[in-house]
Amino acid sequence: MAQIQVANLTFCYEGSFDNIFEDVSFSIDTNWKLGFIGRNGRGKTTFLQLLLGKHAYTGTISAPRGFDYFPYRISEEMEGRCVSDFAEELKPGCEEWRVICELSKLSAQADLLYRPFKTLSHGERTKALLAVLFSGDQDFLLIDEPTNHLDQDSRETVKQYLNSKKGFILVSHDRDLLDACIDHALVLNRRSIEVQSGNFSSWQENKNRRDHFARMENEKHAREIASLKKSADRSRQWAQKSEDRKIGYDPVKEPDRPFRPWFGAKAKKMQKRVKQYERRMEREIEAKEGLLEDIEEPVSLQLRPLAYHKERLIYARNMTIGYEGQAAGSAVLKDFSFELNQGERVFLHGKNGCGKSTWIRAILEAVHAPAENGTETSSGQSAAASGGLTAPSGGLVIAAGEIQAGSGLTVSYVSQDTGFLRGSVRQFSSERGLDESLFCALLRQLDMDRAQFSKPMENFSEGQKKKVLIAASLMTPAHLYIWDEPLNYIDVFSRMQIEELLLAYSPTMILVDHDIRFQERIATRVVEMPVFCDCADRSARLQR
Image (cartoon, rainbow, N blue to C red):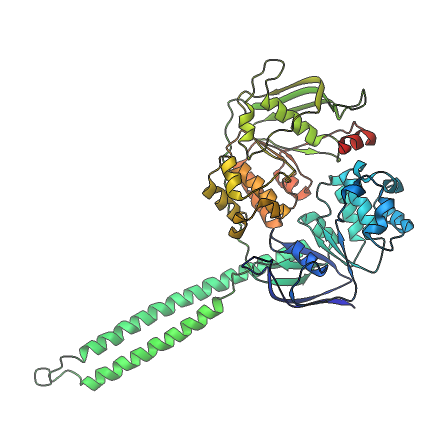
């Protein structure tokens, strides 16, 4: 079986003081379905770029075949063309009939290849590009977060498709996807890299066992060190006492007292025993070193939800919502009713394009401005204080129905978009009125390295950008938290932290997220969003 060999790999970015990889060695088989697991910022995407030869490094990487990377970089010029026109530019030697065969395995029609790329939904784009990626059989494939922004049905299709393939590295934080698709795990720990057989759940179970054993060993060594230290201190006191008794001896006045040489021998014996205790302590301390280095210790996060003076926060009835410029009679939502009470964590569930983000936008606009029926709402300042995000403006048309947002309602909103983040963490916290030290402390609790705080946020990984937005939201006391796809790019350990936080504080929330395990643990209610608009309507909105 052909193997990819990594030997003594060391790499750091220019201007950085710390190595991302230092003297790393391991090997992987080209027939494996390999899951790549690790915290945000640990170097998963960087390692894939090293395999592609995009950065200089020391050490060696040897591979029997070339690499291909997903997602492909789609230029603005390509956006206006069909996939069939530029498929060979993405993957040289790509044959259209093979792409069509792969599309059928993805439960997609061949017409995806002949529609302008910018008119395709997120799910359609992913399926088309995955079909191009797997249309050859010579490359080892590097697949980076393929299910971000995909609805549950599309995720299920991609999951089944990848499960039927082999010869790839899959970077994903979706536990359900990893369990279904991989047979080996490549894990970036805090201080080491390991390769292990099995899926995510088996790796996590093994890790929990190893961590438990390491903690028990650490406690055993700590007890032994404390006991040795106590014994060494006692022997040291005895030795000093014997030394002190050698001084001032008068054989005439104290004929019964032992001779001075006897006290010297006793002190020397005690000192020798002290040295033995110290050597044993050194061995025990050396045995402790490294035991806890790779243990992930997610700290408990805190949230400050506000109590509202009424049970019901949002009420909507028979809502029909569309966009300016849509065809007459068409709408994203029709006759849609919704109610949100205190303490509920409501997940909006449905296909891409069914109106989840549109409905969130309608709620934010209702909170920002007084409704036509005279219901008072909070000013735009409340939502603006919730992490620096404001409701989208323009284009939304409410054709029928009524929506009421509670008076004085404060909303903390996390958008799925991170492209607006610019400048340093200090500038971000200052502009949003956040306490910088507390904000940085919260980011540290989400495992963001201190070195990131001085870097421009546009250079952050997507996961780190998401953590900035989530941390800003967590610092904002609010009656209602609205999070639109908050977990895209967020690592598994941080997802678990956030799950425990939401279960502990039970804030009132509206969420859109397609991580099925996150939804199963957090949701108190799931609202199915009906699909009313057709593909042409979705395409028109995507083009805008």
